[in-house]
Amino acid sequence: MNQMATPSAQAAPEGIRARDLLAMAAWFGLVTGLLEGIVRTALQSLGGISWEMRLTAASVKVIWVAPLFYVLFFVLGAAGLAVLGRLAPRLPMASVAVFLFGLVGFSDLLSASGRVSQLGVAMLALGLAVMLTRWCNAHERAALNFWKRSVIWVAAFAVLACAGIETGLWMQERNAIAALRPAAPGSPNVLVILVDTLRADHLTLYGYARKTSPKLDKIAEQSVVFENAMTTAPWTLPSHASLLTGLFPTEHGAEKFSLGKGHPMLPEALQASGYRTAAFSANTLFFTRAQGFGRGFIRFEDSFHNLVDMMARTLLGQKLRKYVLRKVNNEDLAGRRTAADINDSALAWIEEKPETPFFVFLNYFDTHPPLVPPPPYRTAFTTNENAGEAFNEQLDSFGTKPAPPDVVADGIAAYDGAVRYVDEEISRLLERLDQNGLGRNTIVIVTADHGEMFGEHNDFGRAHSMWEPVLRVPLIVRWPEKIGAGRRVETPVSLASLPATVMELTGAGDSSAFPGPSLAPLWEQEVPPTDWPYPWAELAACPERNRPYIPCYSGALKAIQSPDWYFIYHEKQAPQLYDAKKDRAQLQNLADTPEGQKVVADFLLRVREKRMRMGASQENALAAKKAN
Image (cartoon, rainbow, N blue to C red; front, side, top):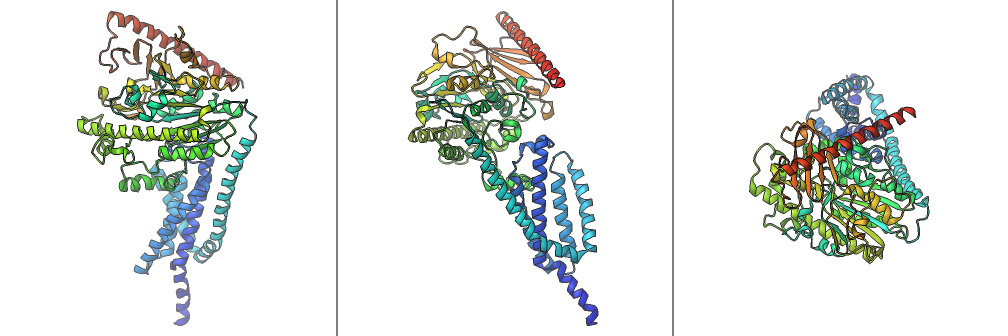
């Protein structure tokens, strides 16, 4: 009897001992993480991921970050199984562990592209996990020995991957800076501060009643302020693309897809002229390398900036953020970078080599919903310590049900508090540059990618209409002792002019790649040029959103502003025309008046002419592509 019991006694502990489960868990966690990182990096570089996956895309760092978090997750699972094994010793715990670890691992890898349906992932992962479990049951002792012996080597590989990737990225940046040609003597630095979702009329310097921008008010006294700056699109991706290429959305093509490689970008031109270039983005959905914005930037910080964001960049972390973190803390975005965080990173980079001129592009995300300004700014314009909480929760439903006025008012108070916070951080950043002796020769541009709707025309949010609050943005240009301090320009201008403006001010090579025109003549001349182009904004049709009440659901839109008129074109609805000076609230549509009909006819002709030019240019580009 003792001889018959010995094999059983030896085999049973082999599959259920805690250290065996931990070794198995560590092996599965490391391998799953490494494979996810490698597969995702390859798919992203080849363009093989879905749009949803691109929104949470990760850099090559995910190759070592994923194993780090997956080891913790799988080991915690093993600890739970070890406890379960003590409570239910008859369970074949080794088989249970292999099945569960395999199921999670296969599900993770099958989800890497985002192109396989959830049902497909579940069915395939289930089948593969069953096959793996059967194989391990037939070779249990050998499998356990393999996991225990090889886990140290897999861990070593992950550590080497981390060291290699981080060293490689450091060397890549170092070599890129070392390879820069000498910049022209006296070349000015360029700092673009973009406040995501900041509408101009919520700044004191644009006439807002609340004191939201006292620091910017003082900065404006040293700057040129554009009263009527129009962004090129009411949402982040196309507007950022215009800011860096000088093109309109229908020209650069980043309306529903990432920015392609066919158009020159401002950081590329500046880098070629000896500039260090860097971007620091808090909008980790759309202003990212994965969306095509990395070209020309020697450094681009858009992810892996803190532990929460590192975890959320993994596929498993995305699930945890969606189904766990949002339940625990549903008020704010997990891992959001504040303006202070962006400033600290940018300043540290700038101060590494201050003798070389820099081009730095910052994206602040603090005025973008959910609105959760830090104290004391959350209560700057209200006594409600949780200002914006109800607004954040109900914002997505405002299109289908009436918005309570008190909730909207509270949301606006939170928004204004966020504006006040950003105002303080912009001042802190510029003061630090002045202290370092860099401010005097730095061109500072403060602007926004788009605004926000707070119930005007019963519209909330952005990205689906063309009203003035979502298209009119602040634009401030400061270069101490170089450009007219205190000048305010009323001529309507487009943010698409910024690349040409920067190229002219810096004198950094040929600026013909950016159509412009440069904004400099508007502050250098008392009378604006008679042929100054009207600013445009464009928005593609969005039937995929399945929200029939939003304007873009039924067709594409365009907006054009002249000194006297504000025109909204919809490809399937009647045009709208408003007096740009007397009716900023856009309450009286003048399109059907005798004078309005003539103005509308002129604007429609401009739309048709531009459409013909775009069609011809696209045909030429296609022919050239085929010829090559």
